[in-house]
Image (cartoon, rainbow, N blue to C red; front, side, top):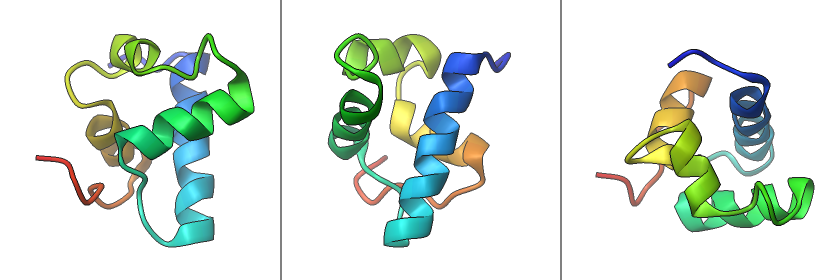
Amino acid sequence: IALTPGHWEVIDLLREFHAEHGLSPMMRVLVRQMKSRFGGDKGSSLYLMTLFPEYPALIASKIAGLPRPTNCP
């Protein structure tokens, strides 16, 4: 994956969430956090799937150097 500014927004959000809560957010929580911070356009699972195909929470967490979210395959 060639990382764009959109990818980095997600990665930074994941790292902040992990620093605060001690775990990587599952997809539903990630979507909610994205929507809260960046608005409805970026706060959807479809947007995240365009950046990180198939398993956005898992792939983004891996790139961010974080543990696997609890509900990911």
